Amino acid sequence: MVTEVRVMVLRAPGTNCDRELAHAFEIAGGKPRITHMNELIGGSQTLSDYHILGLPGGFSYGDDLGAGKVQANEMRLRLFEQLAAFIDRGGLIIGICNGFQVLIKTGILPGPARQELPHVTLTNNDSGRFECRWVKLSSTPGNRCVWTEGIEQLEAPVAHGEGKLVAAPSTLCRLRAVFYYADNNWRPTAEYPANPNGSVGNIAALTDDTGRVFALMPHPERFVRASQHPGWTRRNIEEPGAGLRIFQNGVDAARRS
Ligand SMILES: NC(=O)CC[C@H](N)C(=O)O
Figure (cartoon, rainbow, N blue to C red):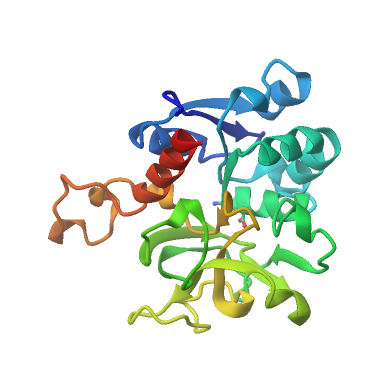
């Protein structure tokens, strides 16, 4: 049983959600440290000292070459062995928005065992615009993701320009979707704006074969207090926001490991 769950929140130049992510882990009972990519590449920090890796949102390296692409290249070329070892020894990973883009573009998602799968990426929203609003998410029945245990529905804000998941049809049916974009009745939908980007299969979140690597386009770290919800005046603002459950699930799973 782990008493102190150490969380590396990995930032790059242009990351802008690292503090919110660290805060979410802190109130979920973890011990976060915001770590710069250069500390990890330079060796002053190592993933082997951590239980959880969090990849926050933002515009890493200016999103040059495409959202998350430069950070993904840095991770793939300089850190891949360390990352693979981290996953193999039971480490947990969450990637949010730009973090999801990084995980997809490193190949860590759909997952090491699935690297042969071609043509999965996140690209420009169908609208051609940056989409910034709250969305509804429904979980996929029977998904085995430790981060989303007990969560059937969730509301969270999106804020992205490149959130459309695309996959070859032969790949799509093998992806482990965790959340779909949903309409007001919580049914998966392709309709804009409930589905903000036109993702194939309406997919908003994925996990890998282990169920410990999880990534999503919406931002649950922006809903850790009820007062952050747009309908906060009709809610008990003493309560936590529903997004906090994700971070509690991660910290609890790491504690059990
Ligand atoms: N909030 C974010 O992480 C933004 C992700 C990315 N920069 C995009 O626009 O798609």
